[in-house]
Amino acid sequence: MNDRVDSLRLRPAGRRRGVVRDTCITLSHGSGGKAMRDLIDDVFVAAFDNRMLSTLEDQARLPIRELGGAGCRLAFTTDSYVVDPLFFPGGDIGMLAVNGTVNDLAVGGARPLYLSCAMILEEGLDVAVLRRVVRSMADAAERAGVAIVTGDTKVVPRGAADKLFINTTGIGVIDEGIDVGVQRAQPGDAVIVNGTLGDHGATILAARGDLALEAEIASDCAPLHSLVRTMLGASADIHCLRDATRGGVATVVNEIAQSSGVCIRLDEARLPVREVPAAMTCHEPLRRGIRRVVLDDHDLCPVRRGLRRHGRQRHREVLTAAARGEEDRDRRHFRAQPRL
View 1 (cartoon, rainbow, N blue to C red):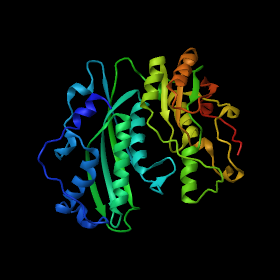
View 2 (view 1 turned 90 degrees about the vertical axis):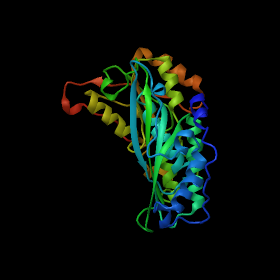
View 3 (view 1 turned 120 degrees about the vertical axis):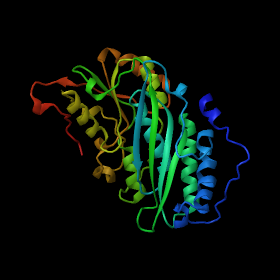
View 4 (view 1 turned 180 degrees about the vertical axis):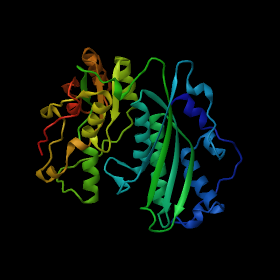
């Protein structure tokens, strides 16, 4: 972990911490009284454990020096997470909430620094389940080198939510000279994907029992900030980065095409799709995936070398030397002929 996060772990001494003795969440845990304070102390502050959070102010006070110097820009993002089941092969809702927000910052070229965590809890939720989710969030934040510095907790009556919902907001810094955005895609750019399409979506469907799979499959949920830094180190002229979650590659390339005014054609034979039994043919892998990278063709080789050196990504694939410009406005969109 970096020195910044290490320094945040020093908390004021002498403050008594409450203890949650209930086995299930009750409405009193959201009432603002002792039960709520004990929940915050025992579950959240104990797990996230940093100086900014442990003061329990109504806001986190961020040191300006951590937010970059002249020429730097702040990146700011928020996202909400609802998933059933809460735990699935390869991850859980807590890991998903941290990694998702870290990745939304990273694909803008930012260095993720701070997160907030707000939770809506359903009355009757097992406290042990909540502890497991919060612990997973803390572990994911530590791996990503970010600090969870502020948050909020609400409890709703039984049936008004599905166990628990999470919102995370993130702040990061974009260093001077980095300019990544969908509007920068140009004719002649290449499109790269760094992982197998469909793993996370298929994992969730299988965990729900909605998809019959004989083969083992797990979510590829992971923080991608270090991989982005590797790629930007190989080429500072990467035009666009996207973390394709809901909607996957199909939605992402459509958004890039619409924003940049280019037509993106994909060679479907080169799409990295996992070989699975026929039971999975109802699942559309083009709708799920990991990151899309759009960059100049002359930067393709150094970026691919950077991906290989990184070592944590299991699959790298050039989808096409793509993003060819079109005069006809009606043709400025993504095209691929699905196999399934």
